Image 1 (cartoon, chains in turn red, brown):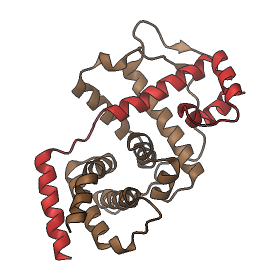
Image 2 (cartoon, chains in turn purple, blue; image 1 turned 90 degrees about the vertical axis):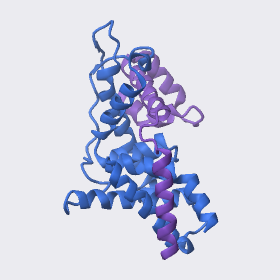
Image 3 (cartoon, helix red, strand yellow; image 1 turned 45 degrees about the horizontal axis):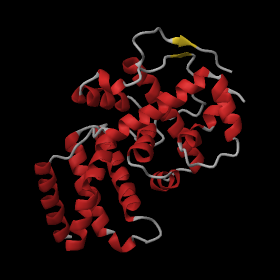
Image 4 (cartoon, chains in turn blue, red; image 1 turned 45 degrees about the vertical axis):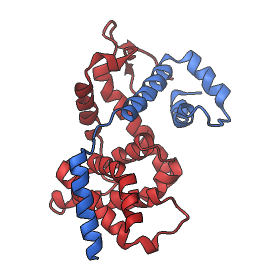
Length: 77
Length: 186
């Protein structure tokens, strides 16, 4: 298996529950290829970090203002 | 109207977040949230129960956000295909491993700045796929339906978005106790 073939399955590798027909081949490649092991681990971390940080919070005062505006507009239509 | 208000309260944070990721500007994101909910309200009778309300709403919000981006760029076309090249992403050869706990290297707000700056550098067509799939947790099928893309197109964009983000974040998160590892690519 080449690195390109491994990368094509990266999505499935990141999903622990996915049934992957080639899982044994992928695991074998991973054991031998530091490049893909690092890519897999750091890509997983990339997703975790983005998922765990709220980059664009909606402040409560803005939220209320938006609600009022939305309801007012909907009532008019 | 009370039922609709409940839906607004249920989904406003997500719609705001998605809008901000696309338009990258708070005022425009506020307008997108208002317009998206208004449009959803007007079209409620067209909503068919065969997709989730949330996916349907996100589709409206994404379209509104892209339109807003187009207006801001004074008529320049903006679509989810923009800047999305077709060739395969190149494999990095100089690949640094990350520090075991990159989050401990930065304070909360510094980390948020890094993450915002990094994702803002992606083309919109990659950014929106990453946000819907990995941040908002939509499935590949839902992301494809929301964006009007094929499943292979979503998978390909997601892979390239993830790899580009990973590569860019490596600048901040790579282990400081070692030089970048030169590892072979097969």
